[in-house]
Length: 608
Image 1 (cartoon, one colour):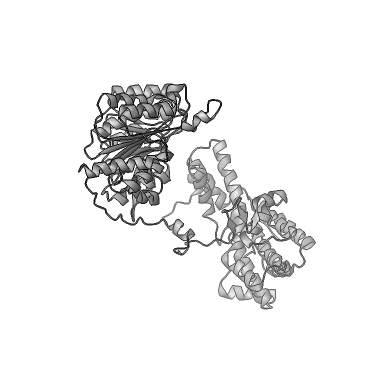
Image 2: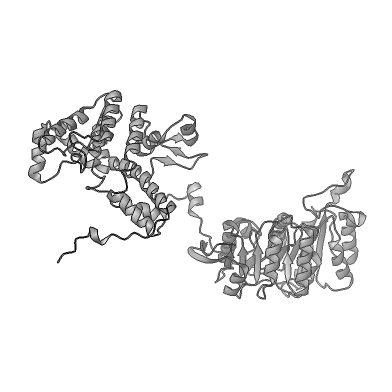
């Protein structure tokens, strides 16, 4: 492996398996370091394409999303680092695919638990092709002031405290990602900081070893000393011992192998990492520390003394003129995310939408304050749900039952009415369910199904003003307005609409008052004296009875009733109900595999 520097201020990466937080942390680090271009060139999300919006400082940017590794590498040929956030199940396969791409030079595998046989295969492939694998089970790595992998070094506050926004003189390598954060802080306190830090991962077979990176650091002129943090288990540290003995490392190395407490236990102990388990005396922390010390590394007497050892080694280099003072810079302020600032009480921001009918922020959605579980447990029906979402209150059972009856009676009126006809024609044209449904719904209006609101509005106004049926009808006639809710193409005075009769029977049986309905019936009596088809139709029945529901329930003020009628609540009942039938017609035509509809010539009057 050897060679030298892995990353620079122009390094760009491809991020596999989209994770918003680690990518945003990488971009925030870029901004902190004063990079001109984001370090994440593209995102690979299998099966998905498009863009993901993230922040680069104050600016919102769109990062391309690719569905395959091959497509991403082709689109971003200068991106030579592959950051793999796949699960342990697919990490090996995706990493192997990345290593096969000629543009990829470094692969970082974050997942723990990658099968050892797969890891060995990746290591062999990488070495044969002169590529670098960091991990598995790694947090990644960082080059101070230039580039970092994923969540390396933690939060921005920690990065600033550790002075990782600008390069220092220390090369650091560890097995543990968590301990890396601890050592970054320690090194920043007693030296000029990190130049590059790598966590190789805690698995038994890491993709690259401690000695691989120490030898690489040795070739980087800016790195003046190295700090190594090993752990008991495995024999990786002995390759570093051999490199020191052979004189391959000519810069000071401060090293410590954690796990000396293992001897205090009577039986063998498995520490946090898969590889942190001593397999004999040579794999003990004591034996490794002794071997490193004998090979020339600076090894303290304990982990607590590690900071002093690093400090003394650094100071000797400064005294010897090997290290000159690093020019301190003030990093820019990272803009705080709005949601975080709001939670901390630093800012207040206006909302863009107001909702009073439902809330999905808690453990379960609520309709008008009623939890979903209560709705189910208490046996609420569709009418109850409508009362909550439309009227923001639980109406009495007779009210919700009336709503349900209206929906059932208005669900469909055969294939010949305009709404159903439009839906059928659209479905037969091969359009989807939503298109077919909407084509039928768009016919609802003053001439088809949309007269419920108008009927309620006019009946209420006439009744409240004390107009007789004669005065009401004649006044409408003078204005040239047909009385909404009166008249039917088929039904007559001697052949009443059964739906109207059922609604009237239910209301007379259950409603406290039916004054508006009785007024509508009186209007019908007068209009029938003019023509036998001027009967009270279903729109008029629903409109007048809904007025009785609102007024008789005692749960609505006069202002609320006027508002409900004005907004168009009552037509909403017809729209909701008829949607059921229109959906049925769509399915019916699809099921019957009906061909494209063409209107017959004989049904058209061609005229000049």
